[in-house]
Image (tube, rainbow, N blue to C red; front, side):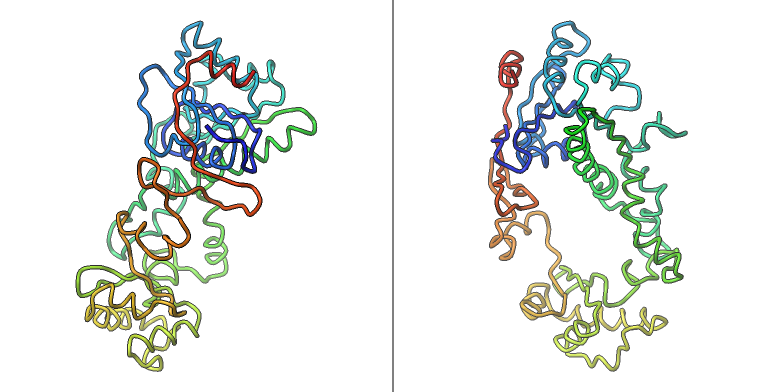
Length: 355
């Protein structure tokens, strides 16, 4: 469980069993010191890494003993977070009205793909479906080819978990003054739409073409894309600013004057030329040439390679805690954060800790 020493020390959160964004949000909140208890059905499997820093307690919410346990924890909690379809918590007898009648300051964090209301609210979906309705999926991929799913990073985690992580503590902070809790309706579609705010601004200003691989940040620019190297590895190029662009050209052995950066009609031609140049050397040779410069060129690392990179190693971005995993983020100068143990607690022990 969390040590209580982080910035959220003293905050108590009940996490209802879920997949996707809820466990990640709970992990981040627990890493920051919140005391999070996971309520799961009997026999539910653990989730390596995602269940760290908190206790897991089994409870059959359809049994009298399980419901009694849940109420005892929820009565002492600052917040509950759940990822069921709309109406499930109410049918289980744990809806916001019921819980806040017992604990008026309770914050109710609800995580769904579509939100609590609307035509799609009761239907199933996954990250790829949620972001398909936002414009995000349409924007990712090669021109003339189908859009490419960006793992489940945008909807589940960017538009979902991150908004739960910000919304729930904000509601807890508010609840402390009037003593009244709130319901936080987190929709992955709406979170993703918020993430796209800059692109809507560009679109409205006529600075974005609503098609793939035709813009500054979608791979359309020869100076903002990935290139294959001689060994089959890749480098990521992002030299947007003119001075960084000039530095990139210099290290590649090219004359920047031959590649006028913002001559958009020639971007495909320039990309072909740069692809030929990057194909002349292996990835790590290019990485060594660009290391320590402002050319904004870096190696594309695999999951297995990332923990070994000197920068990640120096920052201790990864930790070894049974499995290689991310260190807590963000970092706080004064409030310590740490990876805590994942533990299983008996019902009476969980209640006693929160007595």
